[in-house]
Image (tube, rainbow, N blue to C red; front, side):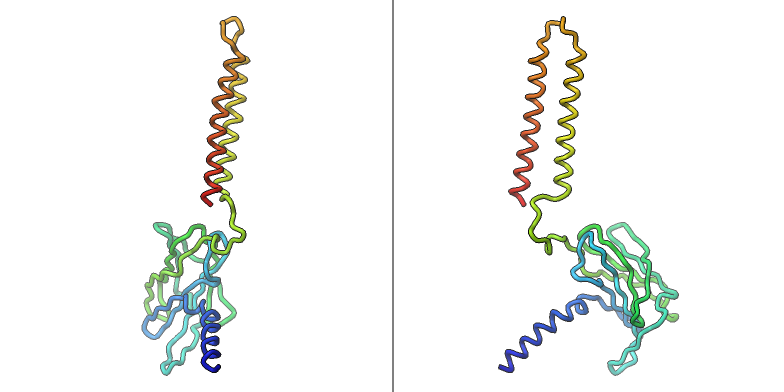
Length: 210
C-alpha cells in the first residue's frame, strides 16, 4: 500500500512541476539564470510570455534573488533570421521578469541575453521549448483550416467573375456575324462548371485528408 502511495505521489509531483523542469537554466559565475515559457506547452496564436528568474548562488544550496537584473541587460527572441528585442516587465516575485509574446509559427525560438549583470559580462543564447500547433488541444478537430476555406472562397469568386465577363463579351458581339451566341455562352458556362467541379473535388479531398 505504501509503495502504491509513493508512486502516486511521484506521478502527481511530476505533473505539478512540469513547467519548472521544462525551463532552461544557465550559470554565469555565481549567477543562475532560468528561462522558459509562462504557459506550457506554448501554442501558435495564443498569448504567452517568456519568463526569467535571476538568482545568486550563495553556496550550500542557498540562492538569493537578484533585483534590477535587467538594468544593464537586454533580451532578444530569435526565429530563423528574424530577431526582436523583448520588452521586459517585472514580476511581483523578486528576481523574476517576463516578456509578453504571441508566437506566430511552430518551431524553436532562441532567447538571447546580452550585457552585464552586476558587472559580470553576460552573452547567452538559450533555446526554449518549441512552439506547437493548437491541434494538440483542439476538440472537436476542425474539418478544414482557415487557409483552405480562404482559398476556396477566392476560387469561387474568380469563377463568378469569369461568368460575368463572358456575359459582358457576348453582349458586345453583333448578332450579324453568323455566331450562335447561345451556344458560345453554353460552352463558356460548361467550361466554368468543369472548373467548379474541380474545386468541389478539392474540398472533398481536403475533408478526407483531415
